[in-house]
Length: 224
Ligand code: CTP
Ligand code: CA
Image (tube, rainbow, N blue to C red; front, side):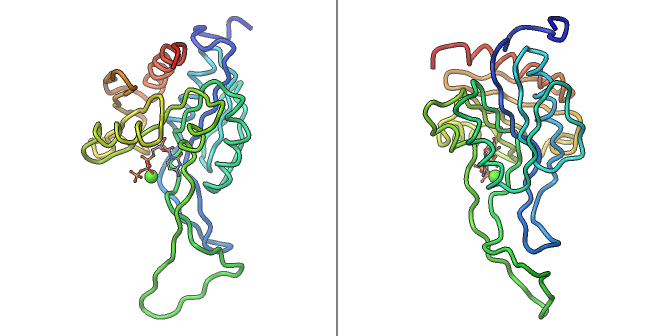
């Protein structure tokens, strides 16, 4: 089995990664969601396996094949994703939140298909739980990594999320940059931790995933 691993940076570690969008049901035929492709999370799962980790993907609905040697747990809504993560977070070493979780869900799910009415309509929404913050608040807690997709003030917003959610590391991503972001095969990020940061140049998501996993391995190995 040694040939399976490209490196041993995460040998014997358990890694849980969230990926893709969530879907928040409105009625039996409709939902709220976003354009997350899941590619970055799946690339991270592949890189974690290459580094020797026992790797689980908690995945929203995406059109991607399960990477080899990855355990995949399929979920739909943010609340499903939270439950799947809470079941696993106390027994993993590293948690990486790459999913684009819907911040809100419809206040009610209608049992029957909603019928149209007048010319205007509005929708009552309620906040979803914050999955990565819940994992970071656990005890014992894994080394916890978030992502921050921003369209402006990228590093400031990311640093704020690192502190507010009590994360160990955050990967800041400028989704307004041309040709980058959700559906793209390329990305360009800055990895930020408590005492430092490193910019990773624009590259394919798999290349970046390997670099991010190596940075996580370096910092997760240090006393927190
Ligand atoms: N996240 C999460 N659960 C949520 C919302 C976000 O686990 N309900 C995680 C994401 O997976 C990501 C990080 O939190 O790792 C940051 O997500 P982001 O949407 O950028 O941050 P929010 O706190 O939701 O702030 P906002 O959308 O207002 O910028
Ligand atoms: Ca959000």
